[in-house]
Every structure is written in C-alpha cells, then in structure tokens.
Image (cartoon, rainbow, N blue to C red; front, side, top):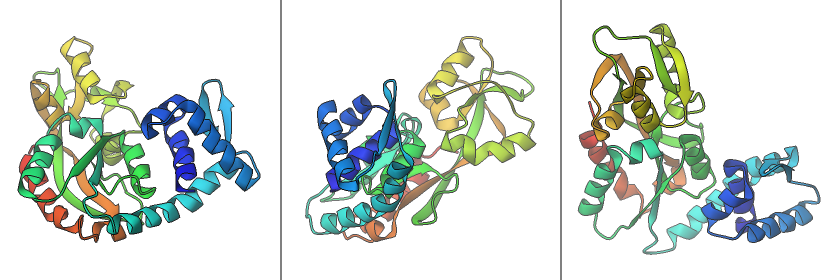
Length: 272
C-alpha cells in the first residue's frame, strides 16, 4: 500500500507519468499499474489525464490528504528500527546550488556513523515529500510551514539586487509567485514598492537575465555569490531559512543528533 500511495503522491507533485517514474526510479508502465491497482481498491478514478499531464480527481486529492500522513508515520516507525539507514535531507535547487552543500559537508565530516542522502526539489515539493515521509529533514524557506511540522528557524539570508548601479530600483525581475521565497518576502517587498519586470522559475536564470541587460533582478545573496555576480543589498529584505520535519522523525536516534550540527553549520555558511 505504501508503494501505491507513493505513486499517487508522485503524480500529484510531478504532474506527468514520466516525471513520476523518474522520481521513483520506475518505468511509466509500473506507475500506471500501481495507480490501476489503487483505483481498483478504492473503487473510483483517482487521476484524470489532460494531454501529457495528469491531475488528481477530488477522490485522489482526498486520498492523498488522508493517507499520506499515515504512510509517513509507518515509514518513520520502520526507519527507527533500521540501523544504518541514510538520513534523507530535502532542499531546493537554489539552496543546494549556493551555500547549503558546504554546510552539509561540515555536518558529514563532524558526524560519525551517519550517512546523508540528499534530494533536490522545488520548495513546495520538498514540503510535500516531508509530509508524506519521503524526506526526514527539510532545509527550506519558512513561508508558513504546515502546523503539523516541527520547525526550527536557523538563519536569515539577505535578498540582493543584481544588475543595478546607483539608486536601488524597485522594478525588478522576480522569482515565480509559487516559490517559497516569494511567499516569505511578498508582503515586505510590496511595502518597499517592488514591481515585476517579469517572473521566472529559477534564481540562476534571474542572474543571467540581469547580466545580459534585461534589467535588474532580486535574488538571494548566496546565489549571487555562487555565480560571481556583483550585487547590492535590497534594504533589509531577507528570506527565513528553516529546518523542518515531522516531530516523531526529528526525535529518532539517528536524526536527533544531526539537528544541532545542522543548525551550527547552516549559521556558519548562510551568507549575511
């Protein structure tokens, strides 16, 4: 049953059979068969196809919301009795392409007997994988994480402008509205008068647009530094970085000792 629910959750988050198959390291036919079995057990359609894309029916969405947390509890219980199991850490491409790998390397080098398994997904997908038990610890922007999560705010990463000189502009290239970063800074940015020239899905794309004369862009300081881009602080605007996990998972003997090490390493490496 866990495998069947995993297939449905993957489809909900990835949107296509192909992406769900890559994520679960299965064939598309295997994903389809799992959905067929689950639909037969439920007695109702769980997905509907729109071209190549797949959406959950109301029944499918209700099943994921109801069953995924229970599956997460089962995985946590099984993992607690599995010595040597890697601790799975999920984070966004933006964090993993800037300062976070150095922090994780510090944890790896100072924590003996623990193996880290690192996964990269867009922020909202990381949160969903955390809730479904596929990730033990998430390193994400805290844009109002779910109430059933244990959240530890660790650092504030400044937001900076790339591609501007002199007076700070307020018309900027911005990250997509579905980004956890935008959700976290939206109100403060609005008070500062920020307006979009346009929006894209990647901070590295924003930097490249700014570098090539398409207009200034608002990005996290870590991305600007990682890409060697000159930048200016944008007032006191920052995004909150947090460690998050299900309470039962964070208390596991293999996970709890990592939290202190992660906090220290992240504070040391998060740009200020």
